[in-house]
Length: 356
Image (cartoon, rainbow, N blue to C red; front, side, top):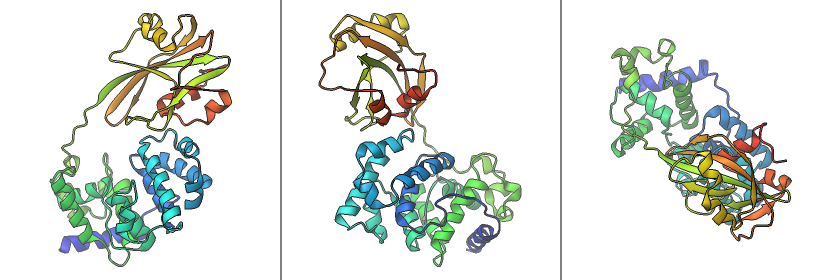
């Protein structure tokens, strides 16, 4: 109990006197803006998230503008951020709040948690930051600080670990200023008790920190999770006919749902260039043997959480139109307005790539 009191008091003192971490949403009490920031920061580095947050708020300053925006417009702004289910849920929840709640963001924890795409962490963050409700947040920073200071080796990715750290975090929470406490704890994990090279010599919790005193900083927290990556091979046909390109919207239950792509051939293995040029599947898909291959890009890779995408782009010019109900044509200007997955968007943004 004494260590818990020391932990909470020291953390709040550090926040008042030493915490210089700046973020555009820090100190924000508007639940909409807090919501946007928290959704963007899921699986995203803060520095990258800041840029997206500023652009997002500029384009959609409130729930109404987001709810009224076209899906394509929202996805285009999200382009490159990844984990597009976040964007899908954001749109659905904005429409629900606008249409069913008269544009008023819910103020109770249970109602916030009921929104699509919001879990216990995000609900706790919004409830405490916007409405000063006593709900402790539990993210990677919090797991790390608590595990190291209190010397707990319960794996953070287990049901038991999540329950244990959730209860511990809640018991430490300031009931008077829960929002300030939550922010302080997350900031402390981000700038002092970092995953690698933590600033232990500058840490005000050092004298009672179990991990520091027992030389266990490098091994805590314990995480037993091993991510298995599946490798997939994407061959994109950039098919052009009279200055227009064939694209489609991905609608299946797979990665990049609701984003756009060129004509895709997914193969089990990597095909060398000679096999690709005479690939019978290309002829079969385009239903015409007479076309020109103008360019085959070098190998490109993108790591996702559970998948490694390896692929290339094959620029093909047709002699006659291609009839396929799955794909539609767009000109260059329209192409730039479509939201693509990062794998495609990065390729198109390359200064050495020309569609002229």
